[in-house]
Image (cartoon, rainbow, N blue to C red; front, top):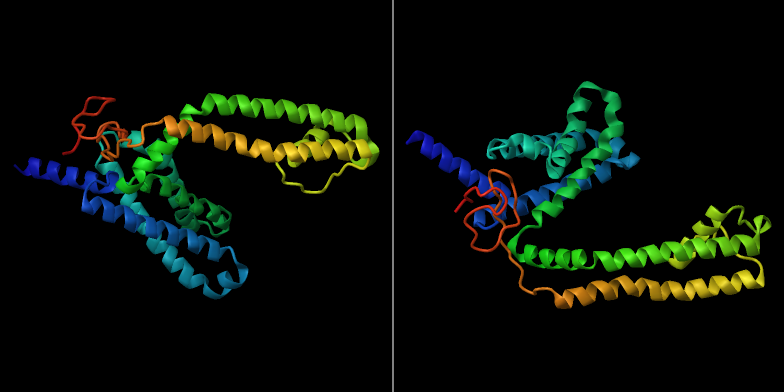
Length: 274
């Protein structure tokens, strides 16, 4: 009976931490999101010299508190899954660990302040937290549309690369080294900057023919920006508009892409938490 109670408690904790189908799970994700954003805000404040020098002690106390909370959460995630090592070596598991390490290292080595930027990796965890049912349906819909467009977008990007190489070579031949186009790679760099309408201005054509070609590339740039949008938009109209919003995560293999009303994991066959 005692073992069954422990198992039930473990399942409840798993549902709260890994899923968002229950009020407790939604509350946990929202609270975690607030803490993550606050911790990233602290990292940004700490990078400002005037604030760091004046409020270093306060910032350090806040950071230690947040680090301890994330450490407890990280340990809990390891304890409630059947294969802790699989979570620890997963993408988000590595991100969680890397965001904790800098603060603990600073406890032993003062010179480890250069690792402070690693704490900003916590922001990547937002993508996992946005599994709330109100977001997961739309995110699955967008991901499916992008995945369905991958071949068309790949062909489009390949064509753009070819155009940049051609235009970069032409500009190298027309403008020459005297006008800043000292090599074909530099001409390609200028072509990419111009075609994407970024326009740094560090290199600019001088000859009339070069400026004419530059004008053509600039006009093409506006049309090129719209092509990927059109491709994805076309696929979005063909996708299922009401995708599954199930947030259940398998305790065995941690797969979380299950169909609505799924009872067993589609990957390993393990029974999901009810």
